[in-house]
Each structure stands twice: as C-alpha cells, then as structure tokens.
Amino acid sequence: MRSGRRTDKGRQMQTDKYRGYTLWGHAILQQDDILRPERFASSGTIMRDSKVVAASGVLDAFDTEEEAESAGLAWCRAWVDSHG
Image (tube, rainbow, N blue to C red; front, top):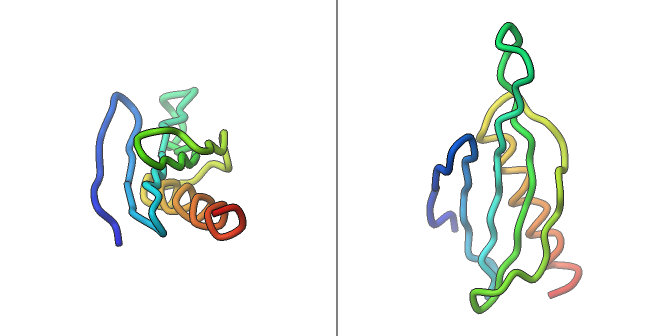
C-alpha cells in the first residue's frame, strides 16, 4: 500500500506501510554533465515508531525516478521480510 510521495531538492521519495514499518524509497538526481540524460540513484530507509531502523546506502542508478523509488522500496520490503 503506497501512502505518499514527497519532493525535497533533487530527491524524490515514496512511502509505504509494510508489516508495521514505514518504508521510504528514495530517488536522488545524479547528473554530472548537463549534456547527459538525468539518472537517479536509489536507496531505502526503514522506520518504526519514528526511529530509523535501517538504511541501504546507494543501491543502483536508474533512468527514472519511479524505477529508483521502487528499487528502494523493494530493498526495504526484503529487509523487513528477513529481519522483521
């Protein structure tokens, strides 16, 4: 169940509630050269009771914000499934 999307200066985030955790999938704009197409780094953050439980670091780079956010959320769900 996706619950929202937030923008924060070059960062896009999707949130999801999953098995009692709040998951954040991040897309971080990665553009070193204006002549190259935009790419988005992906990461994930897991929270419970307003506290960070785990964070992924950069997972990979994607062509779209949505792909990057989805990869971050997928990492979060996998973490919860194996640790939660």
